[in-house]
Image 1 (tube, rainbow, N blue to C red):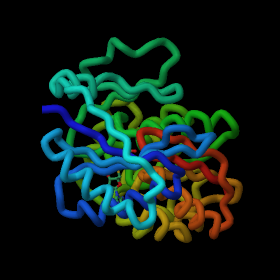
Image 2 (cartoon, rainbow, N blue to C red):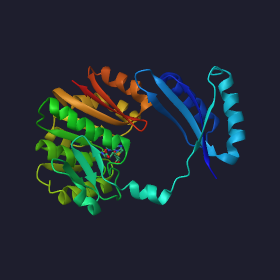
Image 3 (cartoon, rainbow, N blue to C red):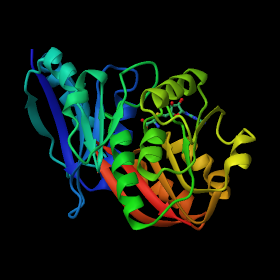
Length: 291
Ligand SMILES: C[S@@+](CC[C@H](N)C(=O)[O-])C[C@H]1O[C@@H](n2cnc3c(N)ncnc32)[C@H](O)[C@@H]1O
């Protein structure tokens, strides 16, 4: 049976409001809801709900009811999604990912690395970060571009997961990197991955929730802090994160849904950081700011 997407087309701000509405209407039900950017320059966004074809009628009626009060000007669009070969799709997911000068690949794809690329070998495992997620790829791309513009002397990777960003930073910059995670399994996996990638020296791993460890004082302040966590903890941590950033330093933040971007920017602008660049990937944003 085919899958259907019902959607409305509007601005970023109104799409975020429609998403809130959809999450209330379809709360606790198994329908995926999402917003996605269609045209950055013209501020065109879509807010969507996905369902199987036999559920379309009732979902559409409820959607129309929900939109009636505030969004009656938005016509409901419809798309029939192509049937997907999930086995082929999952294998495709393991293909190497390229972002900036980096290529992240599994051990089965060592021969796919091209001359001039910085290769990071990560097999899918117990920690987040094979490079396939829009947030990881966004951080890698931002890291490559941020380091074109200036030199950094040390780096913090907060929420290191598989260690992919710490390994990328070490391979690119050859400077000391502190990598931390709240999850001890992640720090162990990240250390293993660092060994496999031949970058043990210069990389320190620590298990710590947020900034609760003496490691930050010992190794900081940092010229570059990369944190791919989630919008809410990133906003909460803004004062501490900025306190550990050296004057003139840069921050790369990800784990932020496109509609949460302005809130995160406000939290960091409030700490006197200036926005440099945003990268959009698959509904997620990666933001770079400087002190
Ligand atoms: C989205 S993953 C990012 C992994 C990797 N850095 C990447 O970019 O692919 C977020 C990681 O942050 C860790 N994390 C979540 N909250 C944290 C916190 N308060 N302090 C430190 N690490 C945290 C999680 O355990 C997880 O490994």
